[in-house]
Length: 71
Image (cartoon, rainbow, N blue to C red; front, side, top):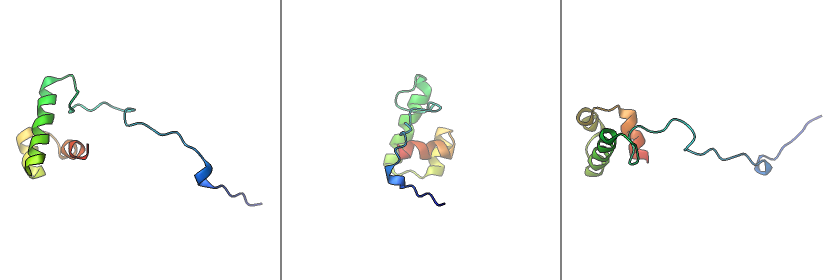
């Protein structure tokens, strides 16, 4: 006996980005130093600085820069 299921008919709950660990470097973080670093990184990304240069100047990991760039 074979059962077929149409996956389009199954409704799965949408998982929000808000579930999980809050970001330490964001525009609305409570830590003023991390908030300043966030805006510094955003400005450098908009100015066209390479990721490696931003990493050295801001003192954060590449993954933090890519996350900020993505958002």
